[in-house]
Length: 119
Image (cartoon, rainbow, N blue to C red; front, side):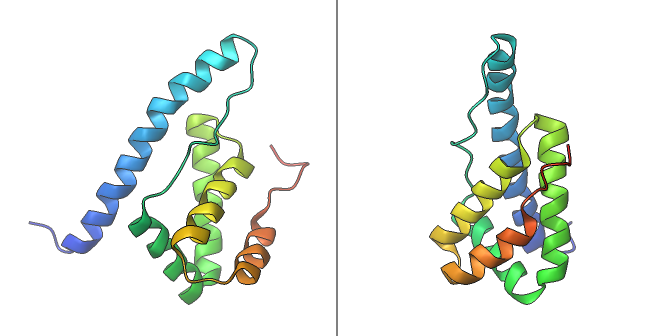
């Protein structure tokens, strides 16, 4: 029995996103073998996950900042997704399904942009 079924639902959605990334990572590995760059333009979040992230950023911006940094790191180390591609995915999802204004989104995500001197 789950202590928090609502939380488990969000975990399931996140797990589905992770499974989708694993499927796409196989395509990225093939592109790498061919000497091509993988295209991550097709990454997306479901509307409920985007709305949850938007709420998290609006109510706990500092905690969300650290969580998004971890997401970028995990996506890069696990699936070799460039950090900027992860940010673009999150920013795009929030522009479609979030309540942050464009100015708020751009300002917040500018702080998350990876530095060029970091791998």
